[in-house]
Image (cartoon, rainbow, N blue to C red):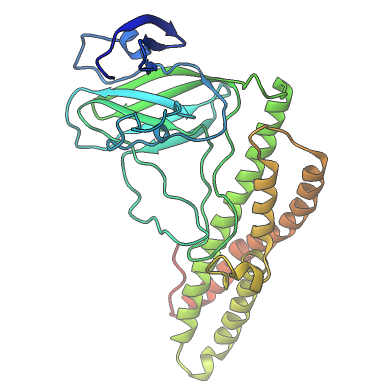
Amino acid sequence: MPITPITDLKFHKGNLIAATSGRSIWILDDIFLFHQYSQNVNEVKIFRPPSTFLVSGSSELDGNTKNFKGSHYSRGVNPATGMVLYYFIPDSLKEHISIEIIDEKGRAVRKFTSLKDSLFLSYDGGPPAEPVLHKNKGLNRFVWNLRHTTFPGVANTYIEGSYKGHKAIPGKYTVILTTEKGISKSFAEILPNPGYPTTTEEYIRFDEIMSELEKKMTTMFLTINELFTKQKQLSEIISRLPMDKPYDSLRNEGNALIKKLITWDNKMIQRKSKAYDDVENFENKFTADYMFLINHTESEIPSINQPSLDRKKELDDLWFIYKSEAEHLLKTDLPALNKKCWESGIGALWK
């Protein structure tokens, strides 16, 4: 803020607004932190955030980097469009910390940690990396974008769509900070956007439908990855079988099962797609169709229309069939072949 006469001061929705003489209006955000100040500097604490409105758009303040100082040399900066969480850590920590958001029903909406996922693989058309918490001594800041958990993908396979969970609906939430120095809880509230026509009942229905879709999408990807791993393991085992005649029956059964696994996989995912233009060259498979449904059902103004419900019914009927096939492969076909592999002294698939 430049050196200039301040002609008026006002507190407004947790912010301090200063009017100057000829040098515009300046705003100091997050005054609520001062209201929660404690002299106990040895206490792990997550501060209660101000009520957060559901809004669209973006801001430089949505990020969690120390490089951005909160202002721009040529224009104003919008407030963060998510829930701003401040937490205090009294001393250096050896172990990782976590923040979990729980809704009124006791359901875990999102969880963040300070541990970077060492197994995360970045690829075109895949899910984004999860944000990582800071665990610096003193005050830390983190912005939750209000979205539910991101669902996983299939490594190195391009799907044109978003893996992000839907935005949490208006209501009361519990925020839990867990560290080796202790646990701190706070309450938070998401408020409806006054410009949206959505009713409470519509918000609840939107959340129920989107949560169901995202849960099924997650199950699909996890099942695809599990069966693909089994397929590669089985192929390796069969390739190493002795060419002696006693192993012909086991080899034939193994190859037949591999074909079944490949057939199921081809229904679910288009592995030839690696980049943007590939979706025009290779036919999308079931998971791409389901993600398309999720992305087009989710919107900034929460609403579930009848065409989305009709399409959901069609795809859910198909998923019931594909899921049953996958369960038969996992619970019947693979264990049966495993047993024969053990009996032949070959070994078996591992988890």
